[in-house]
Amino acid sequence: TGIVITLSKLEVHKAVAEQAQTTATETATSTEEETEQTTGEWLTIDIPAAAQTFDLLKVKDITQLLATAQVTEGLYTQVRLTVEKAELTVSGGETITATVPSRVLKIVHPFEVVAGETTTLTLDFDAEKSVTVTGNNKVQIKPVIKLLVERTKGPNPAEFTEAQSRELAEDFIK
Image (cartoon, one colour):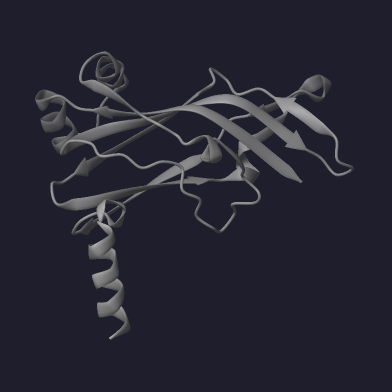
């Protein structure tokens, strides 16, 4: 009846120039992906305390904001989420602690951040495919996640001043 995930860290990997060219022209092999983890730059994005814990079943078919950040333009190749805790609630209300292999969810999917645009990443968790019950009633969560990337032109609404927000709202009403 519930799959509650608590995240402690969100990171994105910015490619170096050579990786940007390789990723843009061909699919990386596993050796290139391993190299990618040690080169380039990992950026940590703060997750507000209120967004760190969420129930995958309650956010089904809705969007819940995880974090926002300003990053430099360029090619990014991977998103990593560190899972602090995972719990399942079964019918009857019993809570079972689940394990997440390696505690790090790696989403390898290149995306570009362009100056003057807002890049929105949507992590689409498939809760039904993510839970496995092993022998001895042990539960593992191996999240099945799709990364959807959307870019929109113009400033990020979170960066608007109060006067700009008021002006935008008045224009909308007119």
